[in-house]
Every structure is written in C-alpha cells, then in structure tokens.
Amino acid sequence: MQYDMNNVIICENIHKKFYDGSRMLHILRGVNFEVPEGKIMAISGPSGVGKSTLLHIMGTLDSPTEGKIFISGKDILKLSRNEINQLRNKDIGFVFQFYHLLPEFTALENVMMPALCKGKSKKECIPRAEELLYKVGLQERMTHKPGELSGGEQQRVAIARALFNSPRVVLTDEPTGNLDEETSAGVIDLLWKLHEEDKITIVIVTHDESLAQKAHHWVYLHEGQAHIRK
Image 1 (tube, rainbow, N blue to C red):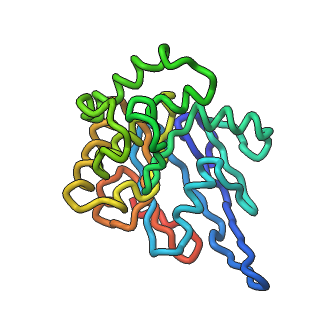
Image 2: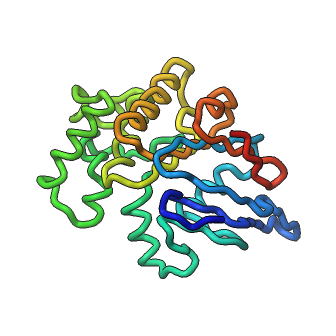
C-alpha cells in the first residue's frame, strides 16, 4: 500500500473476529483497499458479511482484531484514545440509517451539535448550520424538531450535521435503508450533488448494487474479503 495523502483512508489486512459463546466468528478476513480523496466509494455485499463492521472500523468506532487503519496518513492504532477522538471529530462525518437526531432539539440545533459538544457557543455555530440546511434544501424547516420532519428530511438534517466540521470523508451506512424509493433517490442525488459542488469524499455502505455501480469505486465484500469491482 502507498501511504500518500491522496488516500483519506487505507485499510491494510483488516481482520475482525467476534465470539458468540463458544463460537468464534471471523467476519473480516484480510481486507485491503484505499479510499481516494475526492471520490465516492461504495461498499456492498450480502447481509451479515460485515459491511457495517468495516465502516465502523474505518470511522474509529470499532477496532480491528488484526491489521492497520491509516486515516489522513496516521496509523490509528498508534494514537491515544484522545488523539483518535480528535481525529474523528475533525476528519470524519457519519450518516447512519436511523438518523440519530436528538428529538428535543430543532433541525438547526441538531446540525450544530458536533460543535456544541466541543464547547462552542450557539451564536458562533448558527451561520454554518444555516448554510448547511440551505445546502440540503431545508431552509424552511430549520426550527422544526425531528418529530415534525419526514424521514427524508431527517436524513438531510443528518447529512448537514455530518458536514458541519468540514470533514475529509463522510461515512454513510445504508443512508437510504429506512426510506421509500422516491425519497431514497432524492437523498442519493443530494449526496452526489454535495460531492460535485465541494468534492467531498464519501463512502456509502449499501446492499443496492445499482447504487454501487454509480460510485467512482466499488468494493464488494464476500466471505470476509474485499473484491475491487471498480
């Protein structure tokens, strides 16, 4: 593997084992690939193959049993927990299937949450949050709480939140898995639009191979290994 800064994330010989009682489940078995900066990469494969597990490892939410992860050129396993948290907050945005919005806060407040959690004031966060809600087409819904928003609107809020700290990469785990077909298409179009406008690096975990084919790069997981299809 070439450890140059044009690759936002590098996965090198990633293994992941889980223990289910007396059984050992070897989910990932030596996964290797790179996420080039400024591109969209899809990760697909059958249910239970370890797509979400791999994404969590890439996002430092989980650790590999064996292997190395490089993010922005840094070997994650050599960093302290505090350094990993700082790197994650700075360089990685997350979008999950089930939004994970805080129900008691408005769309605007949810978007600025990554900065509020780091001690920034609401006042200094509002311009950036408003800018992002305009960008995702929710300028009329800023003061609405999640319960007043449709599923598609909640996912757009989650996307805006993921972008708040201007991360180098946005990791998305089945971002349309909880949406109907028409709403899903709108969310995917938005992700591609954000990529085209701002050259955001995006990784999409999906079971939808037609979506995976649209990406610049496509990694197919099968029997614990990564097969580069595109």
